[in-house]
Image 1 (tube, helix red, strand yellow):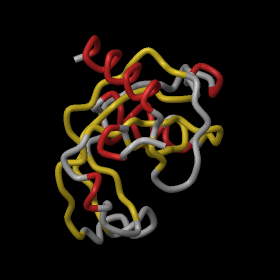
Image 2: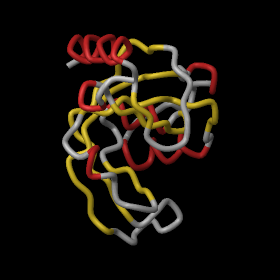
Image 3: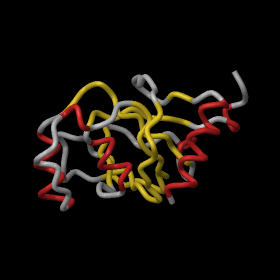
Length: 141
């Protein structure tokens, strides 16, 4: 594998949370720990995983103004669906069920999906996939 400085980190989200974050509609991501320091300020590929959280549809509508109520789970792409930058974080106990660390998400853009298998934790894309994702991100912003 190449030096991680030359590859893009990726993080898997359940659908449609991945699309909400990558579209820029959802600007905070609650997790149980702060983001790894290596992710702060870097472009991060957003992977939409197999799991689908139906409750996210109503939450996105109520909190983000995104109306996906007429969409089916199959209409949300799998794989790498977008790119964003984690610009900071703060401790926040407003949503303890989701986690007490709110990651700030900025510079988000949906991209033409790239088939990719997600995994738990941070994964690093190989160079060829990094090039494809960065090119699609450049087209989207």
